[in-house]
Image 1: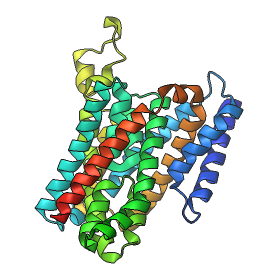
Image 2 (image 1 turned 90 degrees about the horizontal axis):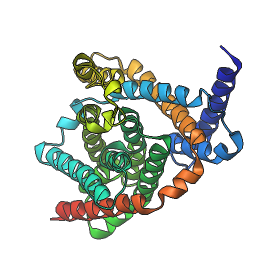
Image 3 (image 1 turned 180 degrees about the horizontal axis):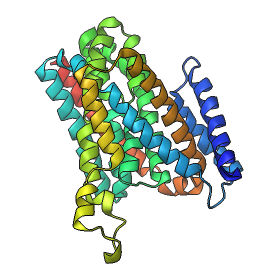
Length: 328
């Protein structure tokens, strides 16, 4: 291992440890979000060389984390809510995803960035953005922008939805369902629903898991979409027929699907699932720090506030519509 790799690993390890410690503080964002912020804050001072292995290490950590994420997705807890609520969760998520992508195209936001914002808002926040970003080979700037946006919206929702739901008269169970449908990150859902009570928590988690489960078909669709192949425009670079068939689902997505299927059978010991979850969070934290520290900040400023505004407006409309349905 040469000096460049040692320096890169040391930098990422330091950022990961710092983000993890900060994320454990009361009222702090998740370590994944903190890692991105730390990386962005450090990027002007680090000045990574052209051939730095930091982005490569980040991508490897990201894809390994996506595979381990599959071990957290099971079907048992989801079935208890009943078909109407589960169908509603799917409809809301798909609507948010499609609306964000559609509006993004109409206001001339990049297709990849619009897709990342839609996936993050519809499924599970930063983790979904990270998984989708590596599937469609989005730039670090687009990935960082989308993660920052959905993290901010999710954090806002964590603190406001419990208060708003209580004020408009939602019962604990319905409020938990609303939180599960409209709060982005799994940790944020837990934090928001816990402030309401055990009934809300019990309802929120299965709804959220149903949304997370949608990551399986969404990643498969994105892997076979034109977005994942857009960089192969030259005829000489286009894959052969066999390569196209093999490339429909990248290796890490296939492993993610396999992990999800295995976890649903119940053969995975609880201890293993717990360890896999812990390792997954560490890998995502490391990957997000690597993404942040590799980002060119002027590019983020050049993107401007319009994509974040689109994502926020779609979320507000979906939030209001879902709340009115639950009140009816």
